[in-house]
Length: 180
Image (cartoon, rainbow, N blue to C red; front, side):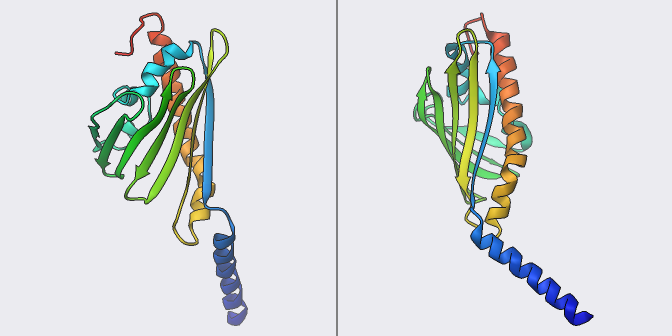
């Protein structure tokens, strides 16, 4: 009986290791929302990192986070660093235009995780479809695929929350012509 149990446990752990080697370590998480505004009204909130605390979910996730803005805070080359209870990192906008949206690179130092993100627009007349996506690859041996598989369930709701806040913020400010 003990021998069968030991063999079963051994086979189970062997399967976990094999699957950890075979499964992909990459992830891609996307969420979309329609905002009742044109890209010109949305982009000032997306391209300006000083506006991000108003709509991105990460600022609320760590009450001890300290954000240090880079020399540029808006558009291509805008950057910021942060440190808090949940780690440190750097974010930099690598592409920015009113008709496209932004691409950004996120380096989370403590987790050894580099992420590429995008917030893109599809103008639909008086409304705009906004797509927020993030993709990356984990590098931890054997457990990376399991973490990658969980990303949609963990990061997805955060993207949804951020897009919901962005929608509310833009629609409330539509007509004022400012992102202050």
